[in-house]
Image (cartoon, rainbow, N blue to C red; front, side, top):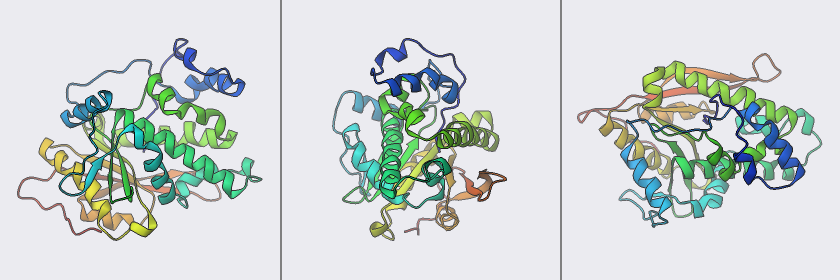
Length: 296
């Protein structure tokens, strides 16, 4: 789902942009240790041209939100709240999302407090992908939103961390939630993706980090549209696509789009309730291949 596990030294220059709120200061004092972000970002030669074009358009503040022929739109920074709210609604009851917000040391929290934190998490993650990745939507009201990380891209680095607000999770999550998110979840995702694809393909693949459809909008083909928007390009580029799925029912849906299960990630291993994520990979399909489009 999210890759922020590079090793680095703490950057004192980056902390200069942080507000003077005491909680935020303390959060950033320990952030480099918890997250381990790189202070520099390299650009591989195999970076996707389409991703470059999207980033250039965003930087120039040019409109790129016009729907494509299949109704898919590339979203902009100005739409991060709407996109994040759609994802938050789609993942409201997701066990993986609740693993960070419904923690035993916050058992006294109300459902409203947990919901508000859940929305913030989605806002930070969505904004980070708008900065460095590709965020697409289908449907008239952000009915389905997908966060893609193109080849050669990631959300590592202090600039993205601070601009997106992800650094605030260091103090907004509880002690248990912080440990689960930064020290269990993220390292597991990073390690598993690398082991599954291998070093070369890991850096050369499209990564479907999040995809969610509002309950009232399911069954209309929106998920297929935002997935095939990228898989068509991945086929043309001869690149693999990678994802983790938190629901067993999704195995059938993704399978019809060419994804195959390759393994499993287990959160809370050995605890009272383990949470499993299915790891899936889609190999590029040739011109005479069939990726399976009958998905709703």
